[in-house]
Every structure is written in C-alpha cells, then in structure tokens.
Length: 161
Image (cartoon, rainbow, N blue to C red):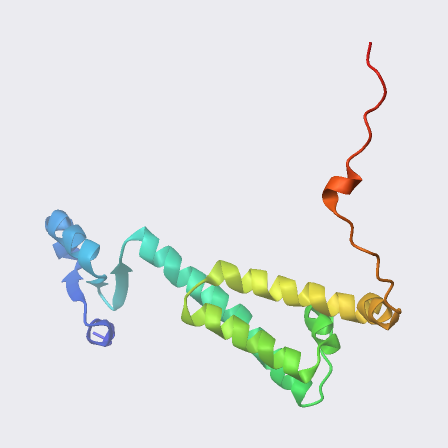
C-alpha cells in the first residue's frame, strides 16, 4: 500500500470488502472519505457534494495563484499580456488591494465571489485605461442648485373633460 490511507487517516477497504459490505462502506463514506484498495490501485469514495467542493477549490486556487503571480510580476516591472493585460493599468496600491480582496474570499471559501471581485477590478482597470474618469475629474465642477422636490411637481395638465 502506498500510504494514501495513512495520509488521509481514512478507513481503508479492499475491493472485496466493497462488494461484500457495500452498505457498511457507504455508511462510513457518509461520515468521512474511505479508500478502496484493489491490487496496487486506490480509490476514494466520498459524497459527491464534497468532491464538487474539492474540484471548485482546486479551480479557484488555480485562478487565484495565476492572479497573484500577475500582481507580483507587475509590481516587479513585468508587463502582463493576454487575459491579464488589464492589470497593467492598476497602480501598485490597487494591485495590492486586489490581491488582499481576493485572498479574503479564498480564506472564506467564497469561490464565486473571487470571480466577481476580479471582474469588478477588471472593469475598473478598463475605465482607468480609457481615461474617462481622469477626464471627468479634470472638468471644473458645475454645481446645480438643489431644489425642493415639491416645487418641481408638474402643473395639472389642463382640464380633462
């Protein structure tokens, strides 16, 4: 045995046990993952919901590691290309804030929120790139006097007969 059972500290059953004691093995798998050993192979049985969570975590971590690597690269002076090129338009403080916000989502295991945070920062970077915000901020203010809402009520539209 290669030690997976010891590594995971789970119950290890043989393939024969699975065939003969299916109910017992599946009952144990509800509580914690179990290992089924057959020849030199080992298989894990765990609830599908837990397997989905594990796959979501791996996918999420892959995205986060790529993002953090891009943040570090930009801070170190390496421009990003392709899907991460938008990050070049963020300032160092913004890059750090992006990384911190994403890592907070990771700590809380909010994988769907990671995608939302990245999307929001990407949109902000594209606005910065476009110069629209810079131009708007450079315009002199044009204060409009505030009015009392009741004074703005429309006059009756004439007589309805």
